Length: 98
View 1 (cartoon, rainbow, N blue to C red):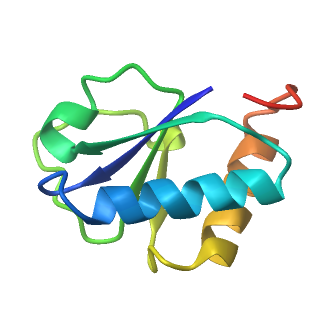
View 2: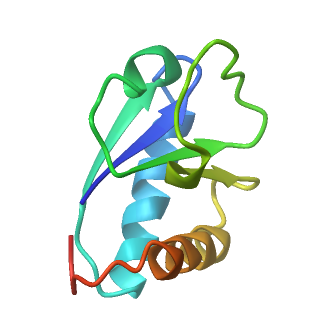
């Protein structure tokens, strides 16, 4: 599974989200490809899941809501882990890893 973390410019928040998402995945026993990107180019990347901070302006961009996780505190691994777990459960992800 490929996950893209997003932020406005691709210089900071997406890298923090990448690190924390990898930590959350590790807690869940998964190892996935996690790619940090700015919002305008990030959706051009083919991915199963996009992780973005709350408040990121996505006006004019189209993506299925079910494949986007919105994180309120990008440094909160517990929040990311919980949202990832729920997404994986809802998507009926059957793999042990990515």
